[in-house]
Length: 195
Image (cartoon, rainbow, N blue to C red; front, side, top):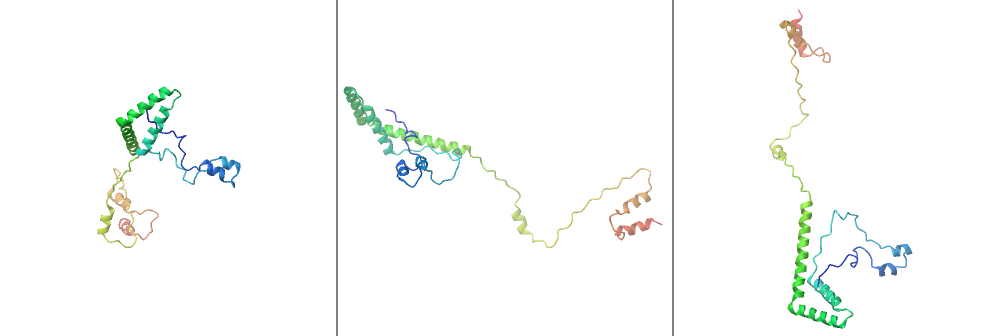
């Protein structure tokens, strides 16, 4: 005797109405009566949320084993049928049916545990980005008022050309750019050199 799980064709899919309910509804068109009606549900991919293997209950497994043993004992030859019936009674007396039930449930539990472990191993772990703790720094300092200061522009040092006098170098340092006004503080310094 080998216990086998019921195939999907024997089980009725979830979310589908039984055929008696479909055929009994007279307000549906013939096409709608033959097409199974799905319940309202989200359209999620099967691979995103796979079904875990179900662990059968003790009574389900025993009922399946009884069904298998009934099919095993029913055969055309009456002598063979009686011999098979004696074998089934002997296994029941020895407690093999209960042992088989426990083994089937243990195997289903192991399969479910392995499926859960493989699902959790396939999930990407979220990355935890730890940056500077800004909350602690800003809590100590009071908030400043007004506009933030402008960025300071660093002026490039002028190239010192060989053979030039210090007066010419100083004149080049003090001349303002053409975009600035004539009354800038640098203009006073130029007047010292323009004698």
